Length: 139
Image (cartoon, rainbow, N blue to C red):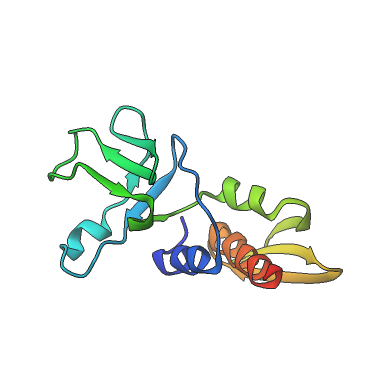
């Protein structure tokens, strides 16, 4: 799973999230809310946390099974933690290969004819760094 910091960097770079069942996220609430709540990782599921589309945007509704009282948060108050397969899919045609090295993984992509490599011990982080580069270059 990617780090919160990298997830925020992807969001800030322009990665949009359309919540789907199985997606993981953390809260990113205003400073006056408990920081402990932001450390928890939640999973979108029809039974516990449901993505509800409203005229003002998307809300993540907590359906009464969480440990603390929270009815819903807006999508802007959440940080998506995309899975490895989602990150690879988001790289689309730029993705060339994932290589397992002795103590790390290398993701190889081609962006605008340039071959780039991103290494990290966690393949999700390597994919996310490649995606961050792709998004940054698309602006």
